[in-house]
Length: 192
Image 1: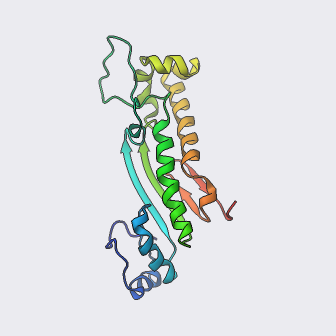
Image 2: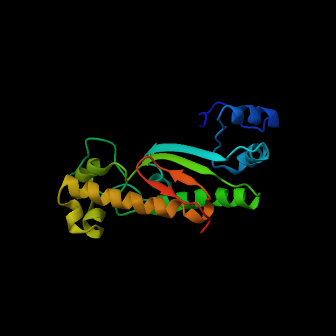
């Protein structure tokens, strides 16, 4: 079991981590290279290395330029402008932001045992995307016609996109572990 945001972000004495292990607990870390020293201390104590990240909203789509829907003249959404379903550049940027630190942990000799990414970013909005997507000139040009036929079809399409984006973000080659996203669950017992 992990404890959420409950420890300093600098290495603690080995006895500290061993006391947690005796209680069936461990300290989670962020997926940042500034956490390598903490991960090394946890690993030395015999603790599993568990990474936890969370974000929501237009992120990670908003990492890229021109990430929003491009609406036809006269359309104004009733809610915040969502990420265009035809643009996945922000996810590609985030993939690099994930792979580089994971590679640094691997290069430092750290085995990551688990990754929990609680990311609820666009295009996760599913059926909420429909109204904006059907008025987006880019979506109408690049998405299959069936994806804009109904809210349910748009939901199915955006769900397929999010599955593909997650595959892009976290290839199993980095892990000898379980990684989870509350909707998507992957498992690897070996290092492919």
